[in-house]
Structures are given as structure tokens and as C-alpha cells.
Image 1 (cartoon, helix red, strand yellow):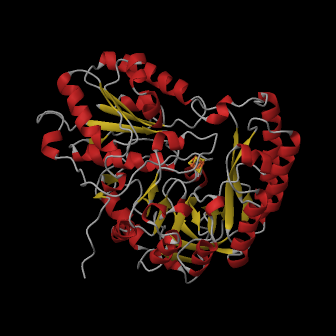
Image 2: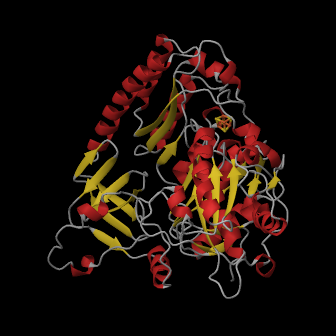
Image 3: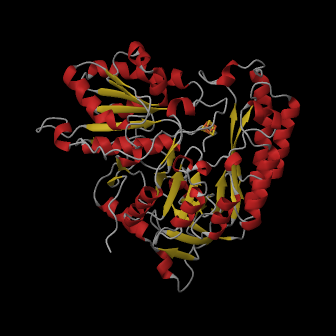
Length: 542
Ligand code: SF4
């Protein structure tokens, strides 16, 4: 997951679904259009999934996603089309505060022109900065934290009614986020939270402070959500947790994650299961066996390394060492030889010497990652590492970073080139690949999660049925014809095109006439069209 610091939330099962009462929350007057919203999401997959829940809550208030035309990813441009703007912030990325206040400053002018515009700030920066946000930007209407996403509708209404800013931050989770209504970004693939929070204390990471201790969701609830996604057309789910390998710790089942993977294997119609992120310290053999023996668990693994130096891992308070990390990769590849393994690496952690960095290069060379998310260390306020002596000068960090990138690019290119000629199965995507319209290719993800751009090629004689263009959610079997470090190309005619329930669901959604789905490449925000479902779904009928 994001280097590191993806950000989950925190809390156990519980609480009632907290679906808002549409009548109570309905905004806008009867004669006017329904109120429109945009949600600007920064940060990791956890935030992306939280934004799906915020969108579901706003839908429940009778609002609709704003049409955005071609406004791209600029939040102020997007806000021009909206009555409510929600910024779901990240505290992990560099300069998060500067960027947040910069965006809020630009929204101030818009708010002066249209005082009815409501601005809400949620996510990790909101949890961290709290009252300071309305002190610095008094035109903000609502500040809510990572533990009370469910309060968004009430806070918006209260701010409107009382004509004053509402700041509500909770120290622990009130409602497990998965019980909230959700507007899914995709109909063919979905996120499913299995836990929120983290019990680790990595010294560079603010997540445990902002998201709390790990709380696991019961397996029955997780599986019910997985089944409901599949019933709605999804072929793929990604199980989300800050540290998926420790899943079960809060209800006392040590092998719970391996069992959950195997149980996903029993869900009829579910073709692809992924998870993020595992922690190397807690990665056990039963999980490797479950990955290998469950056919719908995909041959891909994202496992953060962070550093190859044992001394630096100790300073980061990450309790595995490089030998253990490499040992896990060896075991995974022994049973899943085609697994594509990706990672996160931080360069220039305080005290990192040239020898430490050489260790990182050694481990990267040995690991043969298909890709790495690499980060130059910079101190995050509130983390223990920010106060460590021996911060590495920026120019040294940048120079090492360049060497790491060069090494990983070479390895990625070699690993991808080795696949030329190989038959692969691609799940067609909606948003991958920004050059698609120019090149005429369509894009998707292979089983190992590699990005693939496919030209549909000439249709061979007798294969007219292949001429029909695959839809997002359909599955194409094709052959790799070329490669680059970050993607594969498959420019021949498809070997097979399989029209799927996911493709049907995508088509139904398109034919529903709603055109809010962001165009490929738009880094948007307003939740696209998609079914709104409660995270705790109804059981399937018999
Ligand atoms: S404390 Fe460590 S394991 Fe937990 S979220 Fe942060 S980086 Fe991941």
C-alpha cells in the first residue's frame, strides 16, 4: 500500500448502519435542482474507500454527484459545479498541510461569490489539525475526523441551520465504516475493509495516532459484503487493512486471515481476490499456503520493505529483518512462481548511511520486484522519526533516490520483458491508461495486477465474435507483444473475449443515463455513478 502509510480507520463491529434519513437530510428546495457534491480525495486506498462511503452518505441526503465536464482535477474548478465540496485529506504525504490550506484559500473566493456553498474537511489532516482548520480558514463549514465519517450529513445540516462551523472529531470509532452506505467507484471491482487501525508503531508513521488501534471486522460480515458485491456484478475484491496479517487479533483467531482467503475462494462468481497491505513481521506460512491453494487469490503481492538495512529497520521500529523479508518472497515464489511482487521503500530515513543504503540496493536487486513505490523521507510532524537526530541532507536523499529508481526501473523492465509472448488474462478497466483514446488501445489489469494496454488487432477469419469491443468488467485473453517498465502491451487480436456479469453491470449502469463517471485519467473526486449499497448487505436468497 502506499508507501507505507495507507490510512485505515479504526474500530470493531457494531453499531447500527446509520443510514441517514433521506427526508430529514434532503437539501435544496423542492423547486431547485438536487444539491450537487464533489469529493476531493487525497492519499491512500483507505481514503478512496472512505470517500465512497462519504458519497453514499451524501446520496442518502438526496444529493447527486456534480457533473464535471472536463474540469480535470482542480478542486476549485470542480467546486464551481457543486453545492457541497468535501476534501478527504491525507496527513502522510509531504506538505499535506500546505496543500490543504492552499486549496482552502482558493475556495474562499468561490465561497464569497456563493455563500451557500458548503465546504467540509475530513480525513487524517482533519483528525490531526481539528479546530486549527476553522481558525485558519473560517469559511470552512464542517470538520470531521476519521472516526466519525457517519456524522457528515448531520454536521452539514447543522452548519447550514446554525450558520456556524461544526467541528466534530472523535477519539475512537463510533460506527464501523463498512456499515455505512457506499457509492462504489467501480462495478467490476470493489474494496472491502477487514480491519481498521494499526497496532504497530513504525516511527515514520502517523497512522496509528490518527486511526487508532486495530479493530477487526467479523469474518461473516466481511464475507457477506464480498457476496453482495459479487451479486451486484463485481468479479474482483481487494481486502483492505493496515496490516492484514494481524487480522483476527482482536477476536483471538491467529489464522483468521488465511481462513478468510480460503473462504473467499468459496464465493461463487468471485474471480479475483487481492489484499493490501501485509506486514512482513506477521506474514505466516498459513497465509502463503492459502494464497497458493485458493484459485481466485491472485498471484500478486504488495509487501512494504521500507529499508533493506537491518539497522534502519530497527530505527523504524519494524520488527522483521531483511533476511526474513527475502525468505517470505522465496516461499511465495516457490508456490506461486508467477507472482508479481511490489513494495514500498523509504530513502533517507534519519541516520541512513551509504552502507545502509547499499543494503537497500542489495535487497531490491535480490527481490526482483515488478514495481516499487519509492519515497524520499521527509519528517512528518507528530511522528517519532521527525525528532530524530541525523536527518539526512535533502541532496543526499535525492541522489540515493535517483540510484534506487534507476535500479528498480531496470529490474521492472527486465521482469516485464520476460513476459513477451506469454498468454495473459486481462480484466478490462475503466480508468487505467491515460493514452487510451489517442492510441485506440483499451487497458486493464492482468491476474498478477500488471497494467496492460491492448490493441484489439485485426480479427482473424472465423472469429467475428471477437470483434465486439470488450466492456469494462469483461475479460480478454491475449498475448503480450511488447513491454515497458510500468506496463505490458498486447497488440495482437484477442485470443478470447469473455463477456461477464461485471461487463453487464457496467453496461446497465451506463444505460442508466447518468454521465457522472469521470473520464479516464480524471483524478476526480465526485463519486462516479454506481450502486449505493449498505456495507452490511442482505444475505443472498436461496
Ligand atoms: S504503523 Fe507501520 S504497519 Fe502501521 S500503518 Fe504505519 S507503516 Fe503501516
